[in-house]
Amino acid sequence: MAGALALALLAGCTSGSDDGGTPTTGPALSTTGSGTTSAAPSSSAPPPLVLPDSCAAMLPLTELDAALGTGLPGSVSYVRGQPIPDIGRTDRITCGFGVVTGQDGAAQPALLEISLASYSDPAAAADRVVVTTADRQTAGDRVAAASVGELAAVALTGVSATTLVLAEGTLTYSLTLLRAVVPDGQTVARLVAVAEALRAQAATG
Image (cartoon, rainbow, N blue to C red; front, side):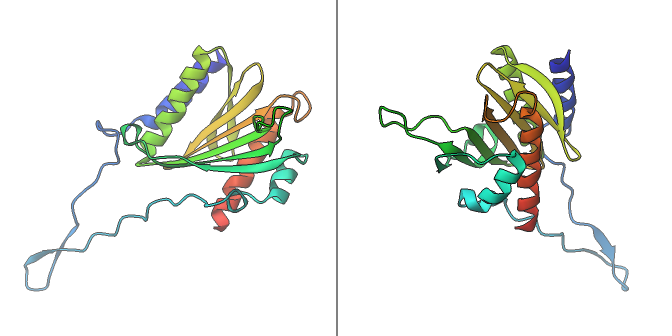
């Protein structure tokens, strides 16, 4: 029931023009004193979203620890993904926090992984959240509605980790926290706190 609610909530974010984009209009017309009609200059398009070039720029460790309620051992990893035009993705970064090396010398999965992805328009970003939710629900994850400030979010809980996903304009957030990092029952609340800290950090940038 919660999964259906979450999907219905997020699916509403994708409604709009038939092509999934933002409707546009031509330049406004104004009438000059001579009675002739001229086109008023249209406002310039907003600049493309630029994602942080480091994990520290995305969210300083001190703020992350405060939001999570605990510090994480190990190192931090940063990976920049590639655009995927087919789904409208223009950029993606992934930061792994709490990365430790196993006995075999290989890096273990990050205790907390945060991905930010930018898309060509808000509809494409919202659609990614819907698709991710459906895929994870099909895989057996428990789905629950959540909120980050005024934004709708979805918590996806599997056997070993919980992921919080949400869209804000042309940006998506995906935060995955492994089990046992925080006390049972606090995982979603801690992920929401981290997401709120990410939004606050972005607003100051």
